[in-house]
Image 1 (spheres, helix red, strand yellow):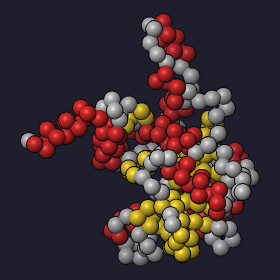
Image 2 (cartoon, rainbow, N blue to C red):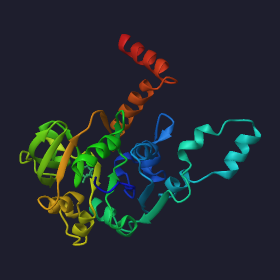
Image 3 (cartoon, protein in one colour):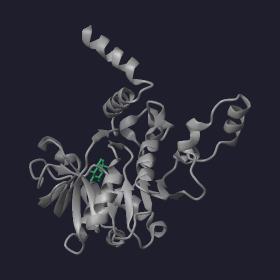
Image 4 (cartoon, rainbow, N blue to C red):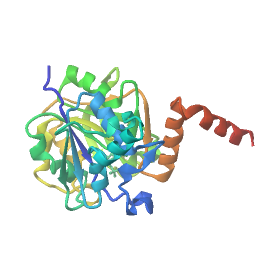
Length: 289
Ligand code: G1P
């Protein structure tokens, strides 16, 4: 049985420029999908997968995100005094010591952001979740991955097929043999030039990695876009440790853009019993118009 995955790194230092002007004063991860900030979905997914420590790699202007997981005494006291339920806040109250933050002082890339958490992660396997990739599954994407990881160990990344015309935007897998939802990984390329991708299997932002990937990041080598890339560090351990892609069962919503946010809002509003019927009626009325 491989070592248990207890810690998850959430790189949340990005400026969110594709979502300006909203992100001028609100972290992108605090923009809501229905009535929950985007970060809540990634945290719920991590907790469901058994993660005990949430490591936020933050930056300037991101304090709202950390405050969100704190206990809001004044708010709770006011709600109590009014006889209102506190249940709605439960998911946002971190347990003591559950949230740890570290700053990425300069935007040097995703690999650099993850590396900023190296001392907190220490010598154990860890998960990485990119919160603007919203994953829906039963169980959640990371829980599915943990189950697969317990069988194969090593490094495991979520894998998702996209049209060939989109591979240049992502980390892309050079796939080996497949077995069910698992595919061996022979190579990884970050943002391959159009037409040169080894497959159309991309990395949608969920990873279970061994500490050797942190050691590979120590080199601080720059890759695509002049940034320190997580994909390049992962590529270095291929062949030295098991490395698999996992095609998860569920839906992925790319909330890195305004369109993605709107689609995710609609999809999740339709899923929920409190909002679904009214939103469904509204969509039907638009279709009928
Ligand atoms: C990052 C990763 C990339 C991954 C993508 C998923 O890219 O570097 O490998 O496929 O997230 O959203 P970014 O979107 O930060 O350019």
